[in-house]
Amino acid sequence: EPEVTQTPSHQVTQMGQEVILRCVPISNHLYFYWYRQILGQKVEFLVSFYNNEISEKSEIFDDQFSVERPDGSNFTLKIRSTKLEDSAMYFCASRDRDSYEQYFGPGTRLTVT
Amino acid sequence: QQQVKQSPQSLIVQKGGISIINCAYENTAFDYFPWYQQFPGKGPALLIAIRPDVSEKKEGRFTISFNKSAKQFSLHIMDSQPGDSATYFCAASWARGSTLGRLYFGRGTQLTVWP
Image 1 (cartoon, rainbow over the protein chains, first blue to last red):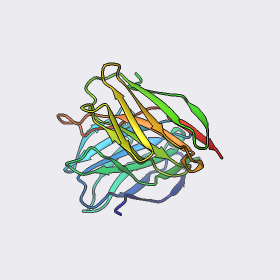
Image 2 (image 1 turned 60 degrees about the vertical axis):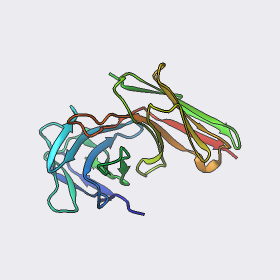
Image 3 (image 1 turned 180 degrees about the vertical axis):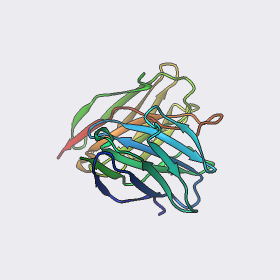
């Protein structure tokens, strides 16, 4: 069964450093999302992406964040200068054009020290 | 503004019992209501979802009940099993215009099923 994959599973970085989180969405899906979940809290939307453009972004997704689809399979989230409060699980999700169903990857645990 | 409110925060049920988790939403434009199951250290997994044109949807032991007028929906897990112990999130979205159906999640319910 097709699934969303994410790498790395765990990333530790120092405050102020740049990180890139990678996702491979399900192959025939066209819509891509990033969400995050701070430990013990609800899942929060960051950004949606379609046709090489951001469709919508939340107030969390400030200028420190960017997304890119560098090739036909990968979808990345970059945090330019990490802060302690960026520590969270980051989930990528994807869906196809004809369905509302979003499928989530296993997540990347980002720890900023 | 909390678009989706979920209760209870935690739930303990005996094996074989019925688990009921409730959600209420604010925005009448929502037209898709999924439930996700999450095990520790894993991503949310889509469990079951409903559109507002039906009042109930059943898949195996899982049932969603939907009350459009009250803006509420609930998840019922029949014959609850220890393997159902997880965190359950309700969510809501719409997919009109330029939006791509971002999901608004509830705060989650930690379900524990005792053997």
